[in-house]
Image (cartoon, rainbow, N blue to C red; front, top):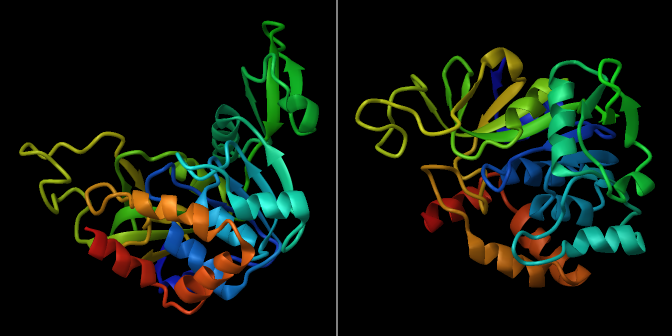
Length: 294
């Protein structure tokens, strides 16, 4: 059952050196505050999983916490490369980075398989592409019923998954709305999970404002509830997804994504930014920026 803890306590209790770790959120609800707390605690030798590694994994890789990254598409969305990831993979700075690349479909299926307790994901895919030539974890099997050639990859079974939700009730159930990505599957596939939320409410389905239901009380698209028994720890972190966005709470800070290209391009400017904005900051430092951004 979910425990309500501070962010620092939740990360310390659930994320450990050498873990396989998933931080999920698909353009929306990316758990930046939790990622920054992992950096502050210096949790290292991590294998990280993510469908679209972007700025938070660039920061974790740049700080030397990551030994391997399992992913589909990686980059600064709409801007360009992740310079710290490239520096680690191409030049071994600050440590060598092993990569395992998949398609979006493969990653989603691997989370689904992990959530179901299966050892592998089997799906139609990887037809006429080159990834199987460079990724030995992409295999092919014959369907015993139709003879069809199908792709198979290992299921994702993280030691711990970290996601950001919109709100929790006092019993520890968590609501996600809008673009939900694979947060549900990532949590169900993991041994442990940490969920940060914008707020705690008495009832998830009471309308907090017009942003969350219409006059007839209908929910927004893609509403997902994670019940308390699926979650190890909940931390209340308003603004915890900033500079990504939280549906009905604040918008994506597009300027920050543009600025990150220059901040992260050189090692010295990256370290200076990290020291000023993450290492020397409290766990709610970005939340202040999120509230200011509206």
